[in-house]
Length: 210
Image (cartoon, rainbow, N blue to C red; front, side):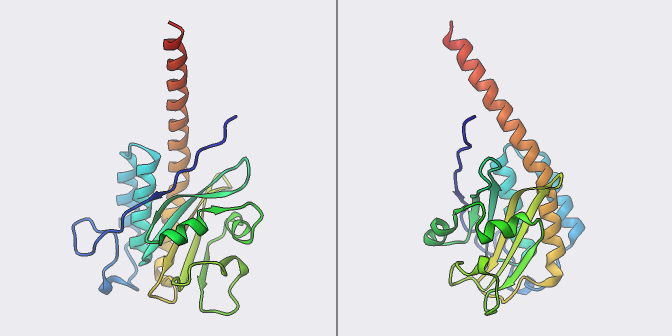
């Protein structure tokens, strides 16, 4: 079986003050977003998402808004190797993306993600877990939220702030609710994508045999 091809998509940073802006305004930081409203809006948008890439971008937008974060990334788990790979990222420098794009199975950060439990870290804390020690210097707070489907970690949603010392506790249930929504969507769209690719290969074989 061929290994999946992982492509990092760097989503352009949205500008504040524009319609549909997912980034929080200064006066929104620290406020608890409406959980039901965000979940409802995301669920409706995901129903019409044409692809896995489009769905992941919607999740990234909503998670940034919910957390009051400046940057975010989504990793998918390669279950053949246990490695984690960036597939969607916003707000990180090129150097940070290159350094964090691949997380090897068995590394402290991978083990932390595979526990299936959310982790919130203040990076100014000298006792911070070793898994967080190699993060970009500009990051002051981090959330790592595993995405679980049928008791298996299939992805991880990471959110970071360069301006706040923590992801506000009031916002954390919203972020975790978004991650919970992501699991079934990722599995469904991965299955649809695999079916489309299989049908395309079969069609190519048939047409090539004519």
